[in-house]
Length: 245
Image (cartoon, rainbow, N blue to C red; front, top):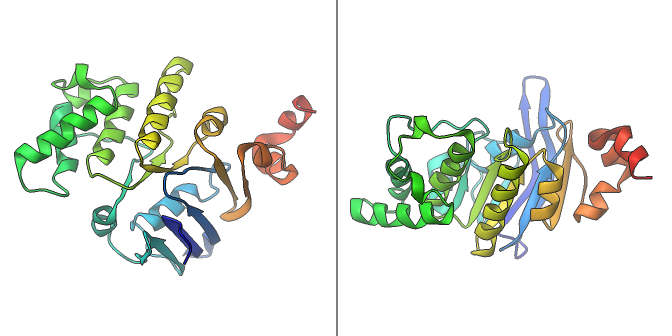
């Protein structure tokens, strides 16, 4: 094993005849921010589901912090130190922002006071203090996305999996969210993020992995990936190539 915080080897899952993730090898080092990109249906969320324990792999292994966590349940994976957000945000609508985040805090404590203390710190971190007593169902999309991140952070992860947290946001909200994610990463939490807003991914991530039809077709720095002809063809499109040549 290397010094990677997360390492997946030959990770594969079949759904009937469909191979959603095919022999995926990738890693995230401690303190690193890595982007996972590719067209719709490329297998990105399936990869997240394999890493976080939602799916059991057909083949391959997941190592986290030097330990083989392949086949553990989502709860067990979370206890090990992997937090995640979901593409479709579903907060507890009739609970306040504080109460929602406290749910995550109970992963590592049974004490309400400790869970509240964790939640307060996280709410400050994601800039939701002004909405702390608001019901989750009354939040804007941008604030619901922040709450989704806060719920994951309250589980005190070493690695945070972010699944399209910028989707549906306007340019100003995206800019603010990018700052928040960079700040989380600088605090010592490693990031693995799925994102279609490529400029944002490039601003946050030092390393990018590209999937197409479940297979890794490229990886490297943002500059290396965006100049890779195979990536341009599969994901960025011929228009990108024409504009940038």
